[in-house]
Image (cartoon, rainbow, N blue to C red; front, side, top):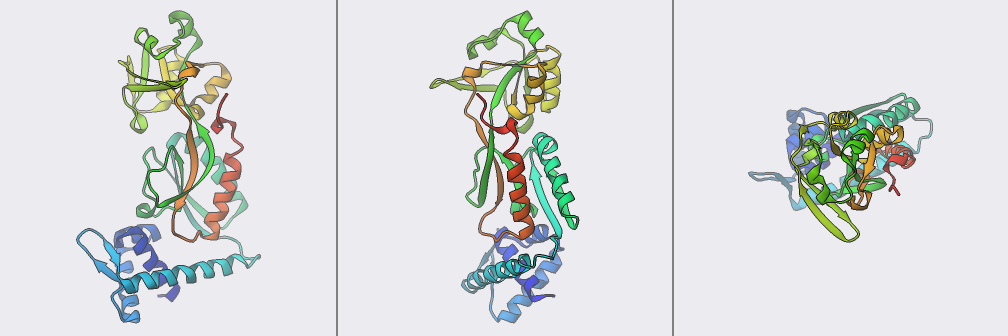
Length: 300
């Protein structure tokens, strides 16, 4: 096995905290990862990883080698990136929320593939935050605050949760002005991405939580918007999800004064790692494209 490859596997083991995590990250078999670690420890003449019941931790010798390995790998990548006539190649694994990924990330990916014919991209769309290290992902698109300090983020815009209804519904039932008015209205609830029957509002320094009893409950935001278009009641969505209907006039945004604060849209990479040139190139490309989308900027 190539010596640089052994170092890359060793760093992946430390970053993921497990042999299985490193195998997923590098798309290798677990036995191959185990053999690489054993060979490296034999060559170093020291135990590099301490095995515990829950995870693998670097020894003092392992931490020293990891620091050197990161420098060596970074210099190697930098040297390759300096060869201007060498095209970028290899796999980039990306994750994004399902609806946002379908509408906005997929076109960015397709454009990037056109620019770099030897690049392969795997786009994993999911409405839960996948662990980048454990899942072997290079980059994520995240909406909302980041809970983990292990991640490095670049903000590219904002979205906010909006309350919408069809014009025909509002003409028939009236337009709610404040959260308390929802008691007299039909609602459509989406339980996708962890949403609940408690709708939280904030405006003018005030906060209000309303327990809704929806006439329709779905687990997909597109279904909620279809029902709202048909006049079945009020629905909540993120602004980028509703903007095609708002632009077309099939849905109307109501109770703007009570919309919660905006949430950031961010491009996220694992912290403490040197970004491969192909990943940095995609990060820069995606940031430039997503920042141009009006649907993720703060709305007036």
